[in-house]
Image 1 (cartoon, rainbow, N blue to C red):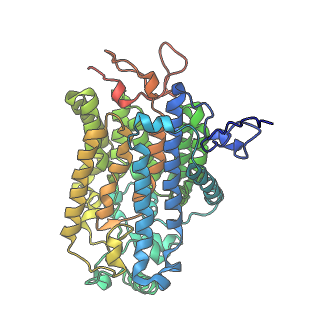
Image 2 (image 1 turned 30 degrees about the horizontal axis):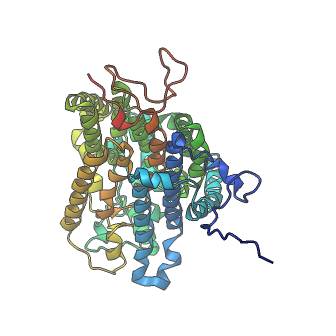
Length: 511
């Protein structure tokens, strides 16, 4: 009997089913869309980029572990840990705004395994973020803890101002130490007095000994006492001083929560779960919030500057406020000029810079006229005063004696070279990726004499906000003769809901 022929068909590997009810990862529909049609490719692409932001936050979170817990075992090589963590987060952020070819987008139909793993890890990191959030809420109702000397000096400056005294001349760290529970190592030591002629950071015992001696002598040359920030840094704290409430943590907590609320408002609905996830997983930024770090406030202002970039006055006003709050905001000026000049013309950038500069100057002008020398000395203190080298950048190799200390000018040259490279890079990509400034503006500080981790903690989440707030490429706006709307939390004359932030490359404003 003739056997029936059997047709053997060779098939490729079967794709994992991602349909509801059949896939154990179906809960990931909250973060990865199931609509992978070409029309929905912008959402797929944004979610891919969000995974990289999650990786950046995952890498930054372990840096909050006390370095003294592993330095005795790793010794000099312990400096590699923060260097790799922060440097790796930079790479992840670059991958987030790295251009993706159409061919690569076409292959990205379902989330890859590594993307699912990173999503799960990001969810796990939210546990630590939730703890930090809870700490910030509880500590908002407790007596103040001045673990950040910048915040303590700013709070004292608000008190001095209400007393009719000039904060830039009458600020004194010893007054803080007498009236508030400040630990000696919560201060910024200077290479002066008993700390002169050395580069190694003082130990806790040395801190306590020198502070006790200074309290008896009535002078503290070894500790930074100046108000080292522009005037808005402490003017925002005047309401607390007015009511004799020196716990200013609620202000910085509110600043971060407001940033999250703005992100929820301006991003596409498909990205809102990512907003909540990344906001809670942002352990490093939560840590800065708990510490009352001024970076939280200026970051909120800078994000508004870029979100409102299509509105001359709104954008320039927020830039002026940022410039009047902290000097790191000044690093964003050349990037803002490039972005505005490339998208809207050089004339427009001059207009905006004049507006922003006028606002920043107006806020500080009373203190400049009060005592110009004291104001300048305070503003230049971060670079002019002999502060000890420290940070997570290349300087950490010398701090741990893995490498010798080089002259300060070497670090200045490296920082300047990195700034030039960042500006050139931004000039090339700012039309398509204007949000890249959130990273590129602070990246040069990684090579500076002082490269504190807090300088870089406020880059990843703002980068995601600006990235997700853009109009997808399938809905590009045509060039208009008038300035278009930017974000949906500002009222529009004709519509109840405004479109999201337009893609930088898709809109050109003519003045």
